[in-house]
Amino acid sequence: MSSVKLNFKEYGNGKPLVILHGLFGSLDNWFSLAKAFSDKHHVYLVDQRNHGQSPHTDTHTYEEMADDLLGFFVEHGLKDAILIGHSMGGKSAMTFAAEHSNLLEKLVVVDMGVKQYPVHHDLIIRAMQALDLHNISSRSEAEEELQHLLDEEESTIQFLLKNIYRQKQEDGSTNYAWRFNLDVLAEDIEEMGLPVLKGSNTEALFLYGTRSKYVLESDKAEILSLFPNATFKSLNTGHWVHAQDPEGFVAAVNAFIA
Image (cartoon, rainbow, N blue to C red; front, top):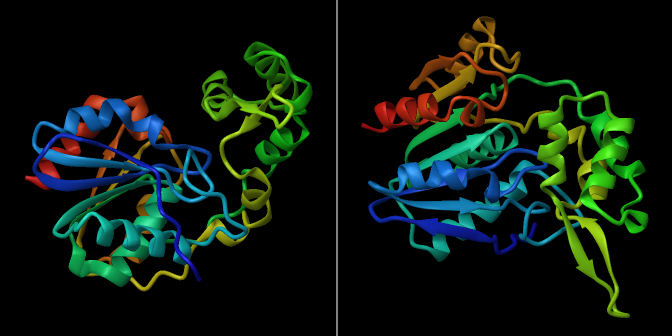
């Protein structure tokens, strides 16, 4: 298993705070939150493998993502860090905490539990694979096509479209392409239901949305069995807790960190 060097951006000074995005996301989704935390922290926004501008690889497992993150921590001399992960990033963060709790002071898992989740991104993946980006001439055309292929909220389609960019070809022409490694993510999506979690004594906050089904009251006992130093906080949001209530999110994380 070989780790990859991760693309990142950094803000502010102080105790290190590392943020991991979710599936089909990138560090770009977290700019405003990073600025909010940067008054007291040295914030690192990281693109996980096969996402954003980090390298594309042939495989996509949580063990590999945790290994990539260890390389990042070593490269930047990070210790006593606060690690925040949303959704897929939450699973990466939990996997990392199980193996490297000595490098963490606190862990924040955003709208993600420890149970097995059924595959539910297959329609989105099939729609993105059906989108012929080579023959699309504008973002609005891509948006129209995705809306036709997907019965999803406008916000979901806009989120996905943040990941298309103009790619230069060898002959000098350009066409649209996905920033994430769609084929590998599609191939490994079932394995991403849940990593084999070993748990951690790291002090953890499980911050979740009451309008999301990812963390239910009935899940808390299982979470506590693996993360005995966990506390829970809910906000009146869906799955995108940090985007739907940024002020509440920052306040909850700051109260936990303090």
